[in-house]
Image (cartoon, rainbow, N blue to C red; front, side, top):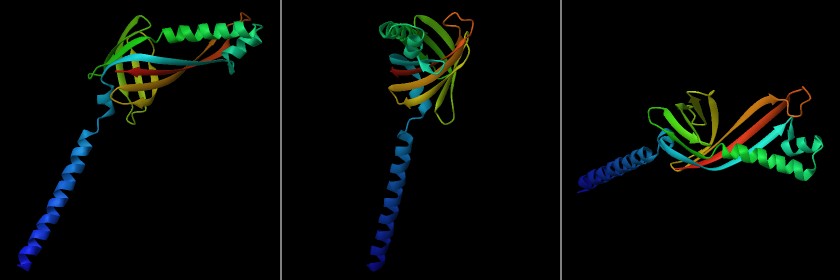
Length: 174
């Protein structure tokens, strides 16, 4: 009888190990690959813009150029609004690593790639230079990205180009 009880205890122990292994394995399969989360159509929800000119906020730049604080704020708001409007619409990431987008009323197509650490998405347009998006959050229904564009432009007609930096933070929903 003791021998049977011992075999039963061993059998019970093996059953517990098999069940635990099955549960762990099935839970790992439930985790979605970030690429699977990315595939689909994303609608732009919010866009935040932070712009600097020569290291100063855009508002401060306009104030330094002699604009009243209310006019400087108005110009900054107009600039930010025009950037935000250019990012209304949607983008569809396809499983074959192509995308189609309609942002700011402009249609675009190309290819996409996500980095091995899932922290950057490269959008390579068929008509525009590639852009690298930093991924702040990617779930099955929320995509938050940011990127910074820099350039030189003579904003005040003094024949000296100012250094301009624009950081864009966007939230998309499926």
